[in-house]
Image (cartoon, rainbow, N blue to C red; front, top):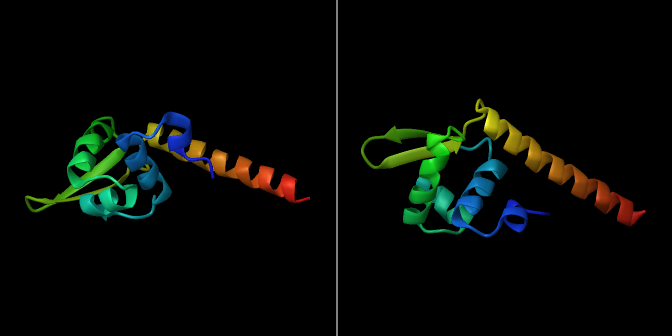
Length: 101
């Protein structure tokens, strides 16, 4: 599958964003996102801040240290990114089916 990393580069922010987009239905602790995206906790915290500020990612704080994040499915930019990822998947499925025939 073509990943956002292949298109936009292998930055930590792209890794985190792609992980969140692919796990849209999940609400996760920051440490879960870090582990799933393959980056450190401190890097995840740093790169997710701009995504929260622009509204693509939604954050909920539980207590002083627990941060829960997920894609903000109400944000227009997040909706565009989700459609983009889905269209890439659809193209790859069509291309795979075309190669199998």
